[in-house]
Image 1 (cartoon, rainbow, N blue to C red):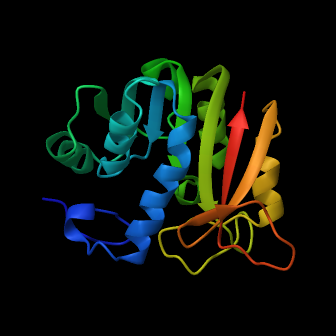
Image 2: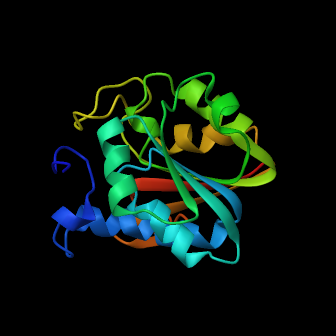
Length: 203
């Protein structure tokens, strides 16, 4: 059984009113309308989000691949959130060979991942290479002091500024940026400081 530590989200071990849980679930609900074809849920954690996608998008999604670096987490996902259209696999998001191992996807979801990675450039390259032409990426991350700068979160390598975050997706044909406050998402409004951004990108 997984333990509830750090930033790990395990719905079965958390109160339904837990703020972190609600925010994470809200991100999947936000992203579900974009899901189609073969879907990658990178850094899927316990697997609840992958199952949400598979259940909610029966007509739009052919298969969901949930990937996480932790083998115990993947074994938990297989036992707890098993679904005929889901395959859970162990994998490193910054492995340069990941695109060859996993193949192409029509949709890629990446929630609260990039801020944990030392080689964010390799991660972004992997994502781009795994996304099919015309495919959609939905990626979220919290804002902070900037790339490479220390932050208050012990599990984060860094946290981008808003400007840095918006500049990550220049390789994509279209990019729409949204901002999350609590469980709600909206375009930017002047004078409001948002804790987290979500990019919806089309290759």
